[in-house]
Image 1 (cartoon, rainbow, N blue to C red):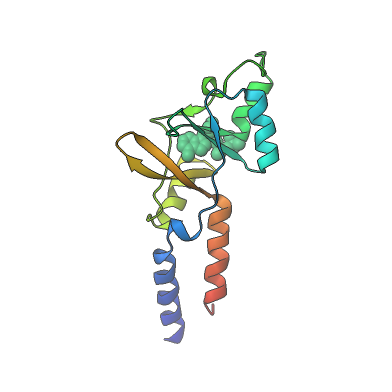
Image 2: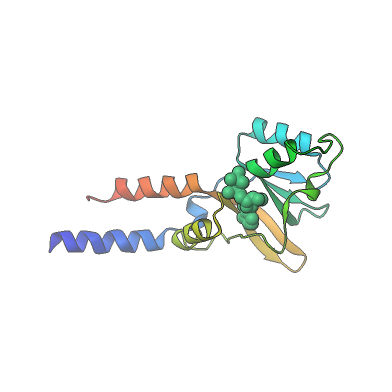
Amino acid sequence: YAGKKSTAAFTESMLNLKVKDFQSVPVVVSEEMTIYEAIIHMFSEDVGTLFVVDKNEMLQGVLSRKDLLRSSIGTQDLNKMPVHIIMTRMPNIAYCLKSDSLVNTAKVLIEREIDSVPVVEETEQGLIITGRLTKTSITRAFISLAETHDL
Ligand code: ADP
């Protein structure tokens, strides 16, 4: 019986995990940045995904490592080409809110086969990026559950 109770408590804790408790700092670039600059930026900021915003700071796109690699093996001039040419763009961006459940957001990452989603605030002007939720965030949540439960 004690074992079952522990399992129920674990399940409840898991379902109560929220994006806002595990999100990290987003790295954002302008849609006019060149692909070359974006590659440098991805290395210097040590992230796997860059979020692309317009002049009003609204979410317009996503750049992954493979987006940048793919464009580097093409024939384009990386120093002239802006990132908006190659990014995945709105309205095809998967995102989440800071109040969303972590489990649902983890499902989105798996179903869409992506590494991260921006955490946003929805406004009439568009989506304002306030954070980043990655597979690493989910892994940290997994460890925190293990640490707070006797399994
Ligand atoms: P990688 O391409 O480096 O393996 P991802 O798996 O995250 O990294 O990205 C796969 C593709 O999905 C890329 O083309 C990327 O632009 C796109 N992508 C990444 N994150 C999102 C997202 N939140 N919403 C929509 N598309 C995304």
